[in-house]
Amino acid sequence: QEQLVQSGGGSVQAGGSLRLTCAFSELSFVAYAMAWFRQAPGKERELVAAITRSGRTEDYADSVKGRFSILRDNTRKILALQMNNLKLEDTAVYYCAVDRDPVRSLRLEDYDAWGQGTQVAVSS
Image (cartoon, rainbow, N blue to C red; front, side, top):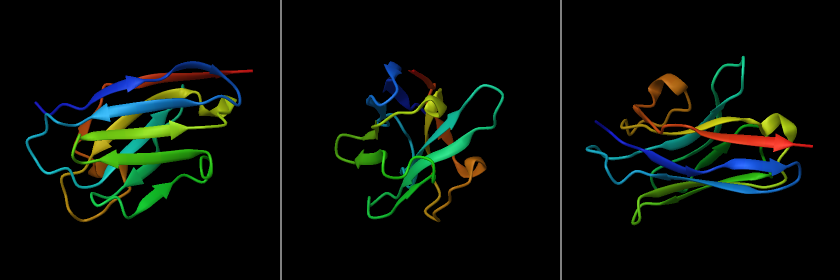
């Protein structure tokens, strides 16, 4: 079974920072695009940020541009999400995901393996 192991997250006050990490060393396939999604209570899972295998292309949801950064280390097989200036509306469960298809996609349904999810709670 493919494994993405997440760590980080927790509770923080608005304006604070958190870093999420996702280890992908246990995959049996080549990891092409990787991404972070999030799901808030009562809402659908949405893309937060994505990065290609080379790291040359990054995509961000408009709501997080300028505040979040996605980082990828293919040698250490670590994906990270640096979240700065957190807002109340960033509260959600965050998931890392990997796409085994070399054709780049930002669609949730195209991602083939998922992390276990990490809670991020932002308070005022």
